[in-house]
Image (cartoon, rainbow, N blue to C red):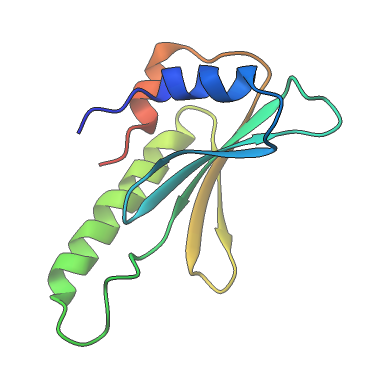
Length: 116
């Protein structure tokens, strides 16, 4: 899967229409770009991790689910090295990494944002 998060980021930041833009989605991850108010030149990148809706309690391979969850939690942990703040939303259902940006980030941040 080839995604160009920088291109999507540039397109979203040049548009003044949306307050929140979905940059990328997988069954496990959503990457959102939020326009901060009142300063419309400041953005927040949010990476949300949750169990895919397709995983039910019955019939799924629990070992595979735990392995995939571990991989995705490690992905969020690595985002902390790029200045993201980690948090848990709700009753532990959604894990989140977020970072406020005042300018277009370096390419290495976009590479780090590509989910597993």
